[in-house]
Image (cartoon, rainbow, N blue to C red; front, side, top):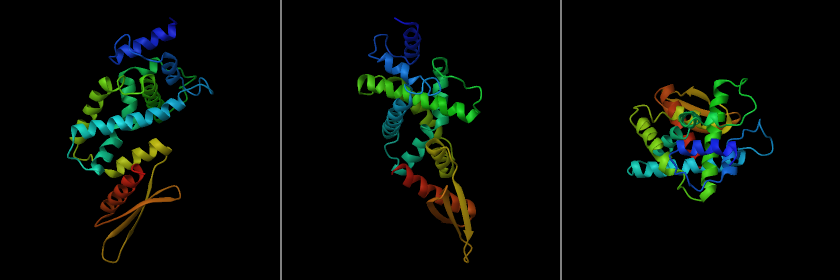
Length: 227
């Protein structure tokens, strides 16, 4: 057994998995290898798989926990549950940074570090899923964390803030912030458009600028996350 595998076994133990869990150690090692450390063999492909895994698990947790919620509510809740910030916090809880092979994070700002941790967390999920091709190595330890996050978000009166949800989504997917353009109509109503670079994502109306922006963000968010 190599020293690296011994380290990875400690991580698996932190996840609460049994000692003989059928983990593909080479794949888990790859999941914790940042592109700055190895350009050819790194976590990027596993991160791609893990992104789908976390979204599926979050969807199942929401359906089980809030069976009467609407699809729009599911989308808004899930965006908070799988945001980079949430995933980075989960990564920190399991001390993923101790096992991450990375050339240098000294020059990264806080947003960059959050992104790296979130990406690595998704890659670990991808590696665990591909180790068994089911959720048996994931849901036993991830479900409680996501259930707690869902309850936290659901208890927040502002959880349906679609401007925040859209911002988190565009930051995670494109590393960009949406921009709002608002104009007032003759009958004292406001029309808002939300743009990402040169693309209009959605429009909304309201009796105030804030209300119109929220309406535009909601329309854009529900369209984008379901596309």
